[in-house]
Length: 300
Image 1 (cartoon, rainbow, N blue to C red):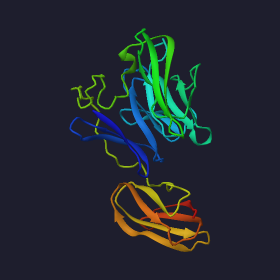
Image 2: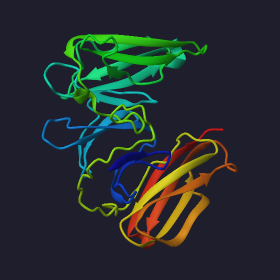
Image 3: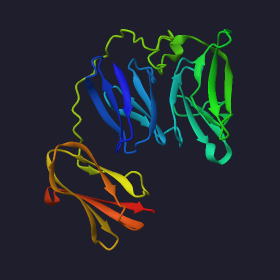
Image 4: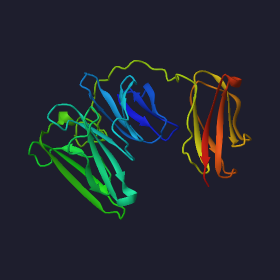
């Protein structure tokens, strides 16, 4: 089984594929389109694997069946971001390591560590000079039997720093830090082209049909001069999508009663010929069976 995130679209979603690259399940986790990597662990010790991911600005925990069981309880985390999961205490429960940064103001970064219930660990956060290029990797660097953390940072003047920490009293074992995979080197064989013959996890089949008609917020917003508008169709529909100014005058027709399949859709809006200001875009399904309007801001 391979699990990935799909970003730089109208929305963010998680996809699960089998060993033959067939799509098994896919679900939407956010209307944002910026995110980091995925980690896997039996996070709540219920015998089933959970998916831990970051989509700006929150950490989202899902089951393999696509149910979101926890989100946005770890505070506001700016990106870019990656999530590492491991057992950082002697209690045997997993913890989350997540990066935040304030690079452009004072050239510093912070790495936050959380317990399963969302509370920060007592020694969190750890501060670094420059942006942490990688979330800490966990190993026993000095062979003393304790968990060590290593990361690399980079500053605005292109200086790089190597940071190493030790967590006193926490014994190291590979079983504590199975995920994320190091490229394809889950078992740390240093053979990055080798994929071990893991047993495929059985996951129920899934139909990606959205649960309802909806119009998403455009991204980016504000924009100049192009932005993307996404919408969902419950079934085959005739779709009209138009843009209006603040006086209600139509300034652009993006779709004009066009027949479209069910599912998620996106369309680019180029406002190069329009002046800066507030505009509204309206989605009309089947001559008024569903209507929704949202605001966008053009800044030139």
